[in-house]
Image 1 (cartoon, one colour):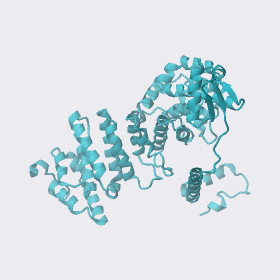
Image 2: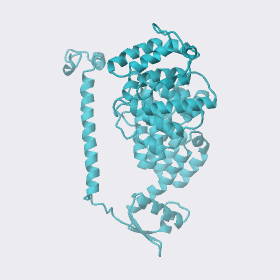
Image 3: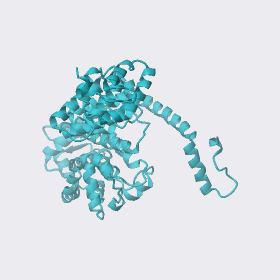
Image 4: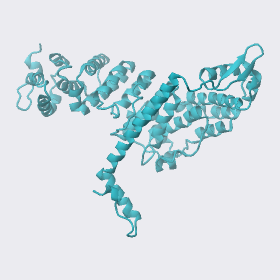
Length: 473
């Protein structure tokens, strides 16, 4: 054990850190004891930060699964702070990872802000070590432990998804994207959750889900355009082309006024510059803010709108020329790969149009009509589309003819019925949640006050009540 001189400090009415350890050991059983312990720990926090003799080895006296609350406070004090050596950082990462895995969820939720802060520091240490994979599993666990309900977005969701992106663990990241998020505390967390989530879905080629998440960023309420929305909109345009095969200059009607005015033109003078946000974002966002800040007079809409307009016209050669002309812009945005996927999807979109006009075509005819180099490339595209279920066709290898078929799915199989039932049940669940949220909002004093003020602005006669009757309190 450690000698008392190594860890002794004075904490309120306590004589030493050893007494605090004793309190943690004795007050970690019942909820009442934990409340008392929490008060003691908060009172001792400032003194603990000032104790230079407190060591990581002090934690050996505690069991992280039984004494989670006290362990959290001491671990936070011992691991926060400035830079540390690579060896020390590696030791700290291992210690925090073990704590996250073994800690009691109910205890750490008593100090959820401190737990979140510890986990964010853990993420930063992992990135400093250039080993994001090491932090994926612990942060996935941390999200579930701090999350009171699967409907609630936590401050750790974006950090977890960021590590999954950098470690290319798309499947792990996708596991926390399947929940229907209905409760959000901080808008920035929601923006980043949807942005990073969209990128993870792009990595898995789940373009429909990616489009849904990026749509959420683009249409989310905002007073001014921010860097996250700007980057999300660029990807939103490209994913829309890949998934839906069309581009529209108009944003969805539910998008905010700021987004409607500025996202389409991307006048960088309207972009909100916030160095505190940029430092915390994925590197591409930081670069975007840096460019925006230094070249605020440059419009950024041209490359992406040109790609969208050429895609709508269905002209491969013109689309490829636009991509070549703006390849440096796409590369700076880390979107060149996505742009190339959009170009590839236009070949498939044009082949899909052919199935609506012809019953049979030769591979060479397909190559000529959609501007592919030769029949072999046409065959590769057709085979990939058959495999992906985009078209139904048979290829005769002898004469190189392709026969297009009707969709064989009769929607009568037990598997299809299960899929339909699952969708129906999810829709019913979402409907119930929407009704509950609507009822909650209709009783919210802040909302009622805003409704009253809005009515006062527009009601000039005595024909209307200041506040709708149904909202009267």
